[in-house]
Image (cartoon, rainbow, N blue to C red; front, side, top):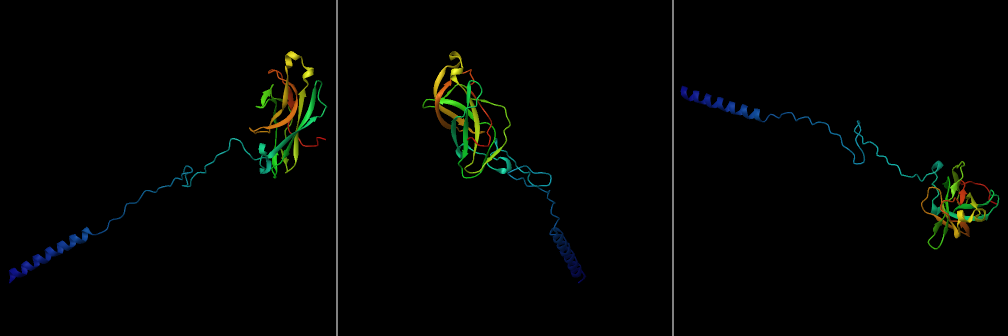
Length: 212
């Protein structure tokens, strides 16, 4: 009988050890702490606060004038020639190139137009482009239908020695509005100096006011 009790005690003790081991193996352990991460926006680099830095870009040439008004483009304008206005310096005469805003909304003009004589069906340039006459060039806001003008002064071929002038018939002017790469043809048949080293005229900055 004593041996039976001893055997039962041994079995009970062994079972207790097995149960203790099983409990120890199922005790959960603490999860590892993840290092903080910062997302990076595809549109810019990440700043110290974790917010994406602003991505900025600037156009090569702004199309906005003063007060946010859009600059006048070639397609917004009609250019016409007022013809011989007189008043030029000795051996020259003056004309007005009138720039009318036909776009239907306000736009701005500022500076000098590019002007040169052209001839032939292909618009071949004759002589040098007109020189700029130094002057102030304020920004001009043209309402729909309003106009500004640039005064051009042209050398009379008769006032220049033939060998220096090399007179040639021209069809009119090729005119580039300020800051534009598309031109407008303005018809005005006449004669002009074609010599490459001879400045045939000057152009003044755009201005407002009457041309009457």
